[in-house]
Image (cartoon, rainbow, N blue to C red):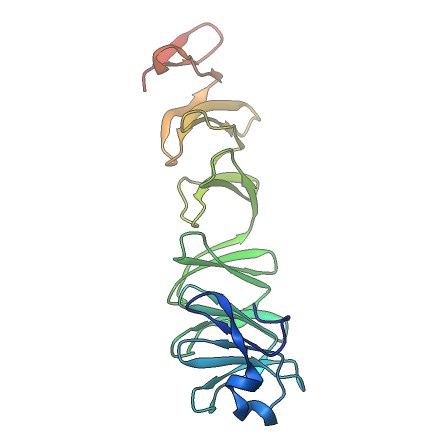
Length: 239
């Protein structure tokens, strides 16, 4: 995000490094402008003016192609995440077209660079790179798992598994999902009479053993899972 020092230096997007040339020596045309930061951006110049402390963009002919009305502009993959009047949105980095309006409390790019997470009033909305909404998860809580690419999402007191890119892997049905062991975890469903039923779910969100048993566990030998319909009748499932 170009909202800090160093002052008067060029930042080359292609190399990710500050230019050794200052604005004054390389861009003498800017003597009559007031700015604090500038960046080379696909044949455009990203600038923040001292007078307004707002960001905008010039083309190489020094024509204003994006108004100086943004409080922050962050680089994403072929996209610009922008902050205007306290709300976030997204622009196409090449043609500067608005893809997501500045309406959200927070906006960030996913790790796989193909989704964008927008937050509004504690609700999570997922967009693709074209700015099209793919899912509205509503008001949720997100909890990490012991697998880097899997999270638990809680909605209306029910848990589902999601990939870190925002893809839902299971239904919202679980009361709890324990730690994963070799890509598998014990899942718990609470019935209407408050009885807990246990099963096994894998990291793809597939139920290897349906959650209908009073007890399940990992048997280390040969990868076999023992399960119990009740306290006295053992049922054994293989992988």
